Length: 109
Image (cartoon, rainbow, N blue to C red; front, top):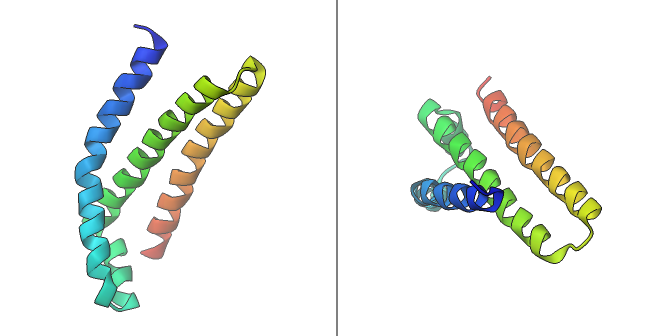
């Protein structure tokens, strides 16, 4: 299978997975409006919420890195610069969700 086809399929699959996760996040974000800090903190330290939010973060970064990678492919002509940009983007897309999830799990300690 062609590399571009794999990217396209992964982009579509991650977008479909993100739909229910985004709805869940938006509904809960709206509920945070009149909650106290302790209630919001309890929500993020609650085990099911922590797991679902972690999935949301992982798929959001995965989807955005694939999308931005396609922009690099289309608009950067230099192969060397394109490779550096893509590798930096993928590194960022790995490190940021890990840091976010670690901080989220550290909240519950």
